[in-house]
Image 1 (cartoon, helix red, strand yellow):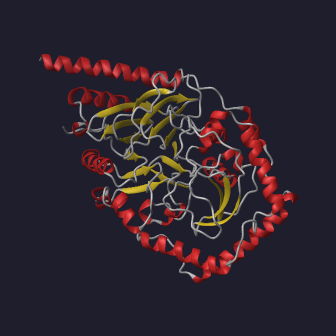
Image 2 (tube, chains in turn cyan, red; image 1 turned 135 degrees about the vertical axis):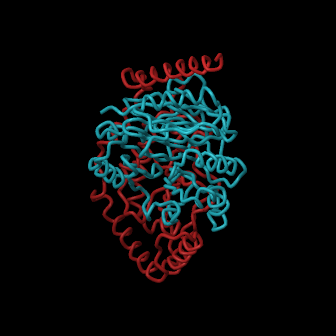
Image 3 (cartoon, rainbow over the protein chains, first blue to last red; image 1 turned 120 degrees about the horizontal axis):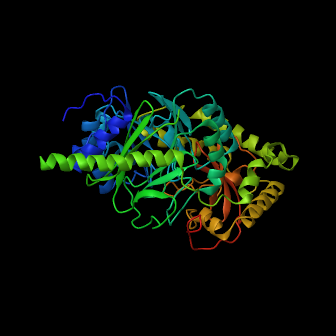
Length: 287
Length: 220
């Protein structure tokens, strides 16, 4: 089905939900695909080198062919266990080879299983920094190292976000500030330091991992939180049932997210390794 | 025709729900979970002891270590962004080897002087004491426990780097970017980030911890 640019994000979303209603599976669904939109994928806790990671890698490539996302953000735990050269191949380069071959760029955050020297690994685009920022379209991304949130990093982050002129401000790091995980849960300590800055400087969306499942948290103080840490590992049944935080969650399948930002509209789909749509939706950034 | 109607009604229903979602998100945000405990809030305002005279000796030793690291660093090829991970791990190892040569015979307490270790021990103990038991457990959940630290050895590359709580980090003397604090078992280690080397450690600084792990926030 050929899509034309739709007149408004709402119309685009209607088209999306219409498409979802008809098709029902990820392979056949396209986001609004508005002209000049920014599209990216989100993966987390990936670096196992095991079958689920490869399954998600294949599914990502299938999805890229339809959605044409141009970059992928990694929310940490990029390489589990040993980090020998062959591990970088097995746990990153091979599973995502089709994406890398097509010029999809990856922007990594560090997880608690990552050697900080990964920042020198060119395909992770960290430019030798544990924390950094980059811009895509009208989005400023702030990539933090939540494993070691010292004063220096906090000062840097405040300076960086204070100076941000982009319409959208998004951040990602490994540890979720809000989580319904039974094994880990919310990182309240980290939240005390970061949330006031998010609110003060207008953060729109926060992505994290660490929890090996998918969770969309109810907006907290006007900020949207997604945990996407099940792109290779999976902690089945870890999402606390009845948690007041959860808007939508999935802890039975490996998942990844695809996001499209067009103007003031943020549209997302969360897709399982089997190709089912686990979650989808859209919202608008307040002006 | 029937199919078309079904599709239209499904799309309408879903879009209505989605629109409500949009409106709901912005106008009536969900209630937040219980706010973080008061200890954490206090720690944000805690003075950074970087210039505290109690740590003067410690920082002298840190500077001395950095001199050694710089000397070693100059002997190995410089590390730039590379697509070859072999260069990253090779350089890490080469740097660690050079540092080991430079500080052969180094002992526990060489950088963490006795006075600094005592002060840091008090800071860590008080931080833990002020945390709910559940929070203490959560901090230690991913701390590797089976490997005792040893000076001038590599931090085991297969183990996670346990996260030091940010509010505790803000109370500890701020380190230069080449070094970091980490927990290994009940010990606080000083780790050289570039060389992945255990530079020094304070033994048994973490209060005896409950073994079982749990989430950080009380279940609703």
